[in-house]
Image (cartoon, rainbow, N blue to C red; front, side):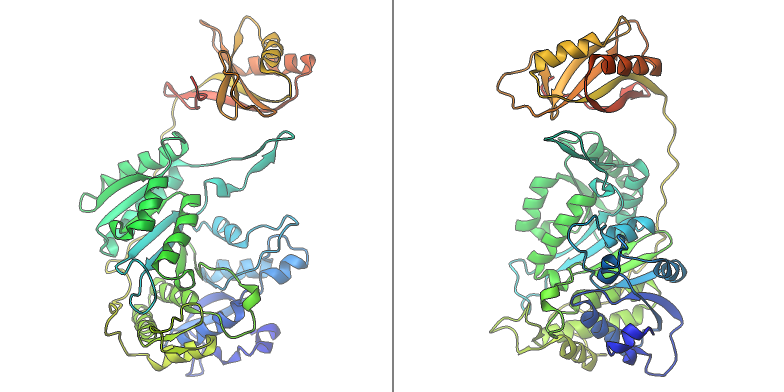
Length: 498
């Protein structure tokens, strides 16, 4: 082990038999409370018989502050690519300075497309308003707004691109149905906002319906995400497994974990075709660091998921049932301790010891853990996408201007010619020319749409001509977006108000 880890008193994590395990696992001890809860979790896993070889790596805050804006170095990448299994404690990302989220970096770089978060209530031992809650949320992990492609375009307007791909949708939706079938889940629900984002979220919903047809034995349904979120918060027993695009899944998996009992109890698995990462869903809580009070449960249960993933389900069951018995016996850390329910308030290390004392015991009231999937399944791959007939039909030109829309329209019309014409101007997606309403509030960011005149075919030479004309006119165009039909269907949205 590294000098840093030895100095933290972590050398007692060797297998009790004195030999290193046979399954290499890359381990990051993290920042804040990370080292404490990782030490406690690994102690339980090893004592339970986990056959793992720990490869510690140094990532996170220390690397960020040393000038590595990604928070991870080449040696860590080498370990991850070699072991293909990552057990990670929470990381602190410094605020400001252009630092990247290490979680997003690892997930996207290693292709960890599926985020799996079980959200389970442990009534009556952990306080909750939803005693029967047992929901798995599967979140797409690589796309959506988390592509992180952002620009400032004018004095007033910033943009973030929402990217949704058919291969990305196919992989996550099929994974959700395969997971449901393997784990005996009866229903898969899809949440999107395709009543507004008809193309991006619409694609996710369309792919969901297509793939659901391949699983006739599993019930399927779709909810608009806002009312679905309300239903999840009020009546979580109405759901079994929910699959969502990235942003909705990130937000609602935390909500689901909290209403189940506590975010501090929730584990997370990030699954890819080649690698997997296991972590708690909570943060590094630096204010609690070094106090031996943090709850290691989320990270420990992530370790249970890891053991199942690497083919050690018996050890996973042993740890999981011991943890359930500990919770059932009222041995709780401060965050879930409640007078009248809990029996003993303990710290991080003592909680781990209590779990170890209960190895080979099972809960009496809570449901006994029976382990991983009854039917192992391969991580699905997307099918090749059939190329469509792609036809250029126009262009949207985005403009920075503070003048009235009628004056802007005259300038934009002056750049047209006998081949193409200005057909529409929108502001934040609302049509304001022609026939706009004076009540519409406008910023300094405009979308101006040009289409070929009747009987003409739009081409890229027209785009060059248009932009040259706009340059001569003095228009401050800041971005363009080509407009295409795919197999005759528009591949672009219309402005609101049309």
